[in-house]
Length: 115
Length: 112
View 1 (cartoon, each protein chain N blue to C red):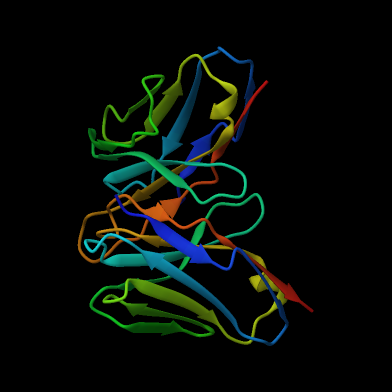
View 2 (cartoon, rainbow over the protein chains, first blue to last red; view 1 turned 180 degrees about the horizontal axis):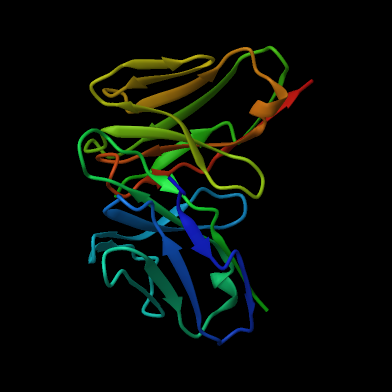
């Protein structure tokens, strides 16, 4: 079990640029989640997938945000035309709907800083 | 939608004392209540969870209680140690594999 991995760990970009983050879940996990965490706050749900299907999107996820999980394995989160308010830690988690309750396991996150 | 509140926001205890963090939730459909510990700059890590058909669960120095009628749940840490210092988040969800709604966090400091 290599755990959930996210890339990059840090991203610094200028306002107005597009950024893309990648998440590789634990291999046998069919569910994948994206959360956003700002300083001093708890993680906020953004969206989640079961296999390649996107099941729910939060109202926090504006039209500038898009997430995909094309083959039901890794996922990407893209932010277009970044704004100052997008600066945050973007966390990915995965779990399984298989037998028994499977809690969500988090990755180390991608810290986004908008200049 | 679900709303999770948590208090206190900061908690300072002497090493060896107990720490208690309390949370409330709003959605009756929530049945799964995980607790995560997050050290500075690190990922949230699950430390214990409880489901709605159970009133209490214990794992060594950590225990959680749930009052589903009142929509309250609590984390108890006994015999605190300096390495317990971190931010603790309570959370609620319909199941372990649904979206999780987190509380705002409690920053626990254990003073040696």
